[in-house]
Image (cartoon, rainbow, N blue to C red; front, side, top):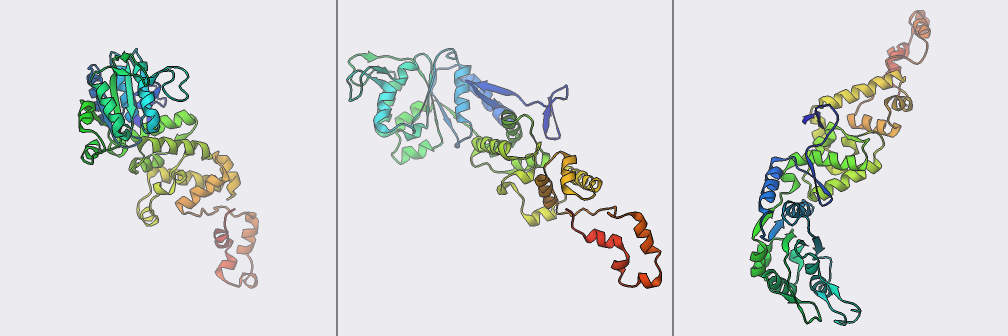
Length: 369
């Protein structure tokens, strides 16, 4: 597979994507050398029983890495249970983790196994582990150390075998120093640490990810070279989640078959002075020439030219504004014989300014529809 003009193509020349893997239903593009190295590390450590702590910014892909740990492990055929620790209130978290017996509290009409039991012999993914309160951290630590536990209201101890993978976008070492996270739990979870780089730190992944998301949303749309260049230069504070949401919005709102830089939000547009100072890219110049040629063929009528180009009139107007050009009509709209009549007129009819005797000059000043 090779990359040609911003599009990945296979040997047959058909548009393709770099390596796409699926981990428990979530597709991931592994294009950059940094992510390829990270996935090789994941595949190696997944064979052990060690707890794994996945860290990184929000939206960077921590859950994909966590799922990869499970899929590469000997537990891949067993249960995968995930829970967002930040999504559950404190008074429900304990019952969700450890389960409860009938009559343990008001509304407990039937016994319920906790997620530790559900994940027995499999993998338990604790997302946003930094949001656990100190009381829940203490009980979690005891289970992770291998001690059996009781369900809420229970009298029988439960022994489980679970691989723990935790994830957080917080600095747990700073949380430990601030007294908000137990140091012993931090070391228990951090047997293997996998830091996931932010998207801006692996720009090689931006284009193939954008192509993948666009194909999922609308396979008939393509991203222009200048749009891809703008995506590659952006800092992506929201990481992959921000990129995916942007592509979904573009796929729903762009009118035409191609997403260009002008279709992107303002933060992707260059400063006006910078844009004027930079030379036009060859693809931009080619697009401008095609548009001007279509306008010439349509006698300057924008609606007709847009139909010839297969785009809407609104898109055509945006392109013209982006390039800052006013294409001139090379052929006057009146019969050539009338021009010859004016040119051969006598001195009396030829008096006046140069503009009044040269119809071509007045044509160039006429605005185009």
